[in-house]
Image 1 (cartoon, chains in turn green, brown):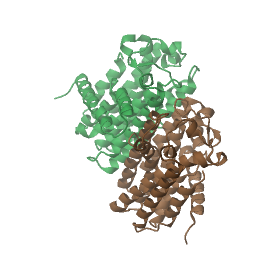
Image 2 (cartoon, rainbow over the protein chains, first blue to last red):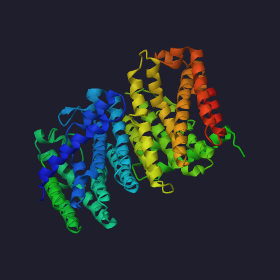
Image 3 (cartoon, rainbow over the protein chains, first blue to last red):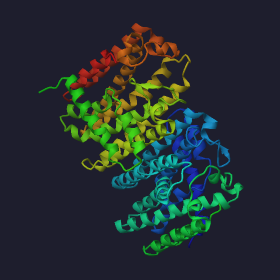
Image 4 (cartoon, chains in turn orange, brown):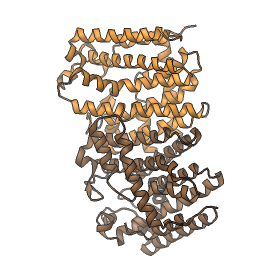
Length: 294
Length: 294
């Protein structure tokens, strides 16, 4: 039986949203920070990163259960990055997905520490997973460090801050998005592949696949900022232009950005066709990224 | 040949201070954040945490070299915690060891991200250490997560913040210091023991030893705040009283705190005497903790 992507995403979102708070509530620590961590972990979102880990395992015909710690770890990293990005000294956002941001509820100090706690424990989830080999756990941790540290997401965030309100060339814009967004999405795919015991060749192809869908994801984000509906994207339409952000449409025009999105999606699909897996879900996911409305 | 503790500490401090910046400079990432990370990593300090990793290896007669990644990892964690603790929304400190704090030099956003980067890469250092077994690396990562996350240092920092300007009972004060300070010092000792292939019994004893010297370390900190010299401790004498902080002397009187310090040091030494290692350096270290003037 083949699952539709819609069913897959909604059931895995539910699964992951059930697990995430348990990883925090089971820790010994002050109640206040556990509450703050769970507040942001439970604030919704598409849960696309954990779903990708499970979708890749599914594509290789493996048990998705072994991907749950890595899936929750990558969502913890994503969540910590949102908490820190929203701080007054960073993006200074009061709302995230329509709810008050962590620091608006718990104060800046606890928000910073909640982010630190989520980041720290994401590695613990993987290190303590007893049902996979030590070598696999280390490979996952090493990939997660590269994807989320200064060689990945944190580096992309720095470049993004430094590029604010500047006219950036396309190469710099791509650096930012590859690092700020694509590397963590790529981690999810590579984590699934490592857990599925994919060959090095398959991992290399999936890394390339992940790069294309990561960049496509970001281009669609920029397009939604122009064409989306505020009620669906959860922030005012046109905020990039107001903030004078360099975006794919600002560099390439809107039709140019749409063409680039199509190109990345085609490349991603061509790579998939070249790997011997049940690629249905992942192909549908490419289409979803290109056509999503939030 | 037995090394004196003084020679040991100064030579290992030099060794670690040579290695720390290399772990960051070798990463691919924006120059600005690498500079900010290295700024704080190079800001001096006693380097007691890395020295403990190496001292334990030395006590077991093992090669200290295999402890360098864990030693640098724990110093990165300590450094990230100082950067985040100094932020305006936390302790709001402008100076650290006589130098401007990270956010005073690089701004708050980059300071937060520098801390995040150091925290992330501390796990990478251990995960990528090729010359020890996968099992040992995972044991180190798992211990480091517990020592530095909400079950350890971050949890202690939360409790410390929430206890500010309140009269705390001794049990709460001990919770704070055990978590904020002792757990990370204990990590260093346990990491050395894991790397030295100590038995579970030896590790359990060393964990107990570490608890006593960690608490002793903090009691001496409180005593120095009363009796120390500003030029040596790097902050104004009497700041705890000004800030109405609950301290060991405030709860136990100054002689009472000194007695408690002695008790913890005696316990620590008694445990050491009961483990079959060359304990000279570690014994001297107990004395140093009890008598240090900064």
